[in-house]
Length: 166
Image (cartoon, rainbow, N blue to C red; front, side, top):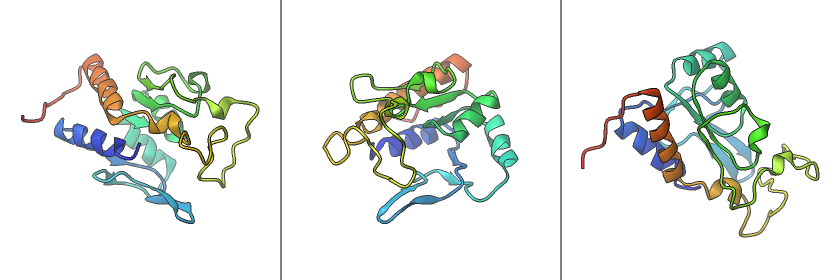
């Protein structure tokens, strides 16, 4: 979702939270396709020890992200995980009450034995590559859905939430 991270980061900052990116790389990709840290996130990327990332996660109020090593590390650290799930089936990861998946679109291709993941293909979408449905599993998850889940998590955990001024 092109605007999803911007919406989520704006909400979190307005609610008094720091937003920190601890990915390994500031940007990563190939050719003309690159993923980069979301605008507005504090940059703590780099070749740092895993223990440093674990420390960040242990002291975080929550972690937001896709199925990844960082999500598993956050879970292991006891940090609530908001899992943005599209290409993996919920059975693929640990259980979290804060999973966001759109069951009304294509989903779970990662767990489909008919498809082998291609690590070199940044356009990997085995069912809809090259069509208007490409990446719909995550593209159709909105910032509003993530924010709704964050509000529920914040409420459930009794975390602070400063509402933005009107």
